[in-house]
Structure formats: structure tokens, C-alpha cells
Image (cartoon, rainbow, N blue to C red; front, side, top):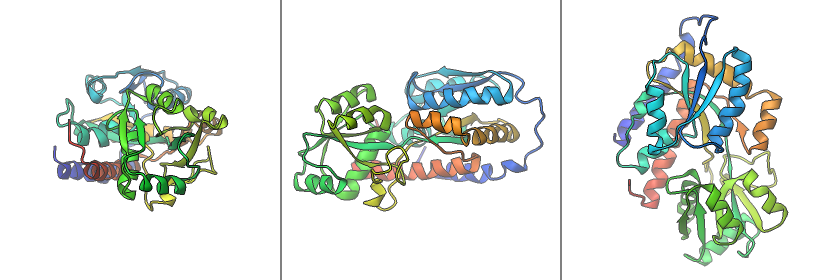
Length: 325
């Protein structure tokens, strides 16, 4: 699928989503069966954490079990196949961070699934990543880092959780915007990249706040900025990259997708329930512990955010010279 075609699809989804509220009234009986939250990754990641926190509360509200299923593999294809294996009856959804929808089509030359099978339903949360630098690098602020990196092209290396990950693309977007030259060292997930940073094997990296907070306390690393559009309540003294690069925003949005054919009223019901859940103080508290901030946009808003993410990724991939694998 060409980028132009994908943008047409996203634009159409946004327009379609805007009309969901005009759908027929939903029976009080829905949902009448257990709900499945399918995660295209293993347990413990951000989508998994968000799904479990949200799912527990959703189960209490709708009176049906919410089962979280981890379906990793195939760059998202296994999870999409699991979603498409059942009828479009609003009992199965994918919960993910946008990668299978807005990133993978730019990273992989061939995909074993189609994004046209997925309907954006509701944004649950955002997970801002923090740019952290090891203490061996002689910088303590974002400005000092920028000046140092410009004065020492090619000297710094950075770790990521893999090619095409938000951690990787955030750094590439930062580097291309500022004209910085750094070496990328990809790892197989944050379970490898974060220890590499803390041990000084890489100079800097983007990662979630909970994985970095302990090292900040020991002063082995310094937080320079967050990739969200604004400062995070988790570390309000840390600036946003957007304060140095206007418009910069790369925090992944974790949300829910329904399969194509799902009745709009069923999608809207789940969207309304989730949007209410993420405003609850206890849920906000649980999210914060995991380095997550609530979102809550419905189908139209989530489709629009995915379109913006698609455009950000396309621009970053082109600037970095990344070729589809």
C-alpha cells in the first residue's frame, strides 16, 4: 500500500468515525459475552499494562469478563489474525501503541495483514519517553547536549529497543531536526537497551520514566527532555523536546482497534466506557505508577491522532534514510 493510499484510508476513517455518534441506540444487553483485549506483544510492555489496568475496571463497569491475550509475532500479524478470526460482534479488540498501524507500513516492505481491517476505536493513554544521558557524557541540560553533539559529530551513540521502535524514531526525529550525527545501536527491547544505558555501554537513549527513575536518584543518568508535546507531570522540571524543536511530539498513543465490520454503536459504547474510565482518579494513579498518562479520545479523535502519527513517522523515516526491510 502506498503512503498516499494509506493517507486516504486514514482520512476516510476519520470522517467515518466522526459520524459514529449518529449510530442506532445500543441495547442494554451489550456486551453479552466476555471481551477480549488482544495485545500484539508479550506481557509486561506498555500496551499490556494499559490493557490490564483498563480491562479490570471495564469488567467491573459492564459486568462481563475482560480477558487480555498476548499474541506476539509476525510484526503484529498474529494479533490481527486473532482479531479477524472471529465475527465482528464487538467482543474482540486489539490494544496497541500505534506501531502496527502507523509505523510498520513504513518499516516493512511486506506485511501479512492490512490496516484496512482495523478501525480506530478509542485512545486510552500516552506513554511519554524521556531522553536520558549517562553521567560519563559531560552534559546536564538539553542545551548542553545539543551543543556537545553538534561539536562532536559521530562521537555519541544511542540505544533503542529496535529498528522502527518509538525509541529509535524519536531519536532520529530529534537528530534530523537539529542536524546531529550519532550512531544507533539497536537492542531487542528495553530489557536490553535500558541496562546498556545504565551501564554506560551507550551514551543516551529514550525510555519510559519508571525504568529510569531509580538511576536518576543515584545520579548515574540525567534526564534531558521528554518526547511528549508538553512536559510530563511525572517529571515537571524536565523540559519537552518541543521547547527546543517547535511541534515535536513523539509519545506513543496506546489505543483500541476493532475489526472491520464491527457495528458503530458497539465501538462507541466501548469508547465511551474507556473514556470515562481513564478520567477516574484511581486509574490515573495506576497509570502514573507505570509512566502512563490518560488520553481518552473517541473514534474520530483517535483516527486523527493516528493520521498525525503516520505523517510524523513518514517524515522521520525519509529524513533518516531508512529503507523498508
